[in-house]
Image: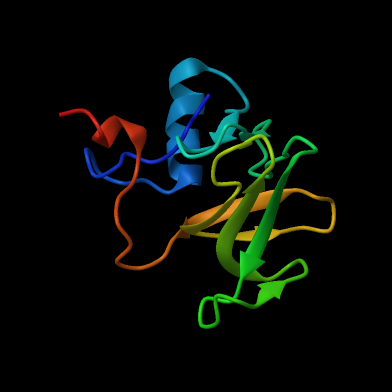
Amino acid sequence: METGGMKGKRKELIRTELHTILKNGFGVSKIHSEYGMTELLSQGYSKGDGLFNCPPWMKILTRDTEDPLFTFKTQRTGGINVIDLANYNSCSFIATQDLGRVHDTNTFEIIGRFDNSDIRGCNLMVL
């Protein structure tokens, strides 16, 4: 299960490159992935095809990179917005610095990060 980038600790690899290395190393045909963050209680999962599925209480939207108040319907690359209704009594709406695309099948893919965005990750919180 691959859970995200190197968070600046090692050379960043694109997901397909990392999955190729992992598939060869473990002798498997697919690497599953998780999309989540410490700010969310829910995660999206991919069974190895790069398309993530969410639980029914979580929704992914893409926003225009030039106009953060405009969201796309589907099939357009944009900034990832997450609605996670499991975040009861917390922040249920998060605008990330991730770039992705939502598909008509209620799946989504992560393409990368905004240029010059901060490196994020719970493993960076350790002192």
